[in-house]
Length: 172
Image (tube, rainbow, N blue to C red; front, side, top):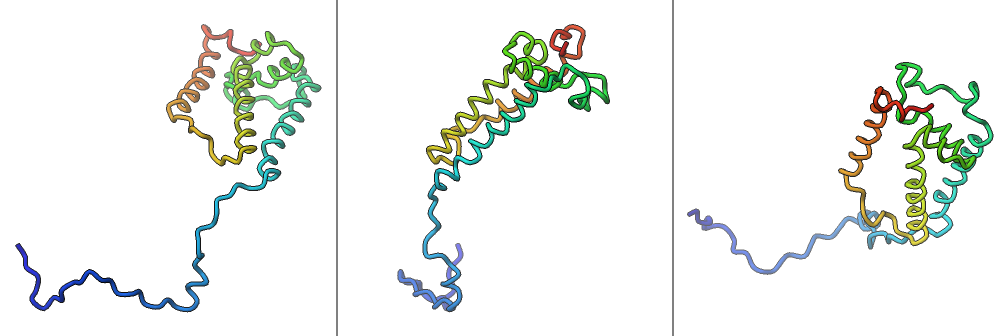
């Protein structure tokens, strides 16, 4: 057991007042933390309303310029280098078929794209709702396991569509 030195002053329950701050320091420190008010509604809605306009413009191009005819769009670099279909191969043709109302052809070109369209619409609607209500973050984060599962699904789709047994996944 160690004892305090005899010369140590006894502590009282009172604290000394703080020393005076330099004159320049109080001006540099904010009196209160900044408020976390949401941005004005027009500013919050700019990105969620601009995104579908850009997507619609790109979709209009794909709808009017048929990707089935060669020369309009570049070849997939992965397909050109390896000779294998990537998970996105056939997506332009699937979007073109969807714009023409031909769901069966769209599924034949790239089933993953057809499944992604409704999911992207739901995600956009949630983004728009958060922007209107002023919430800055989604109420629930996507669990990492779900993100890894989605990545595994996309990679598996890319592998299976290049195997003889999964050739019906390859764009025709």
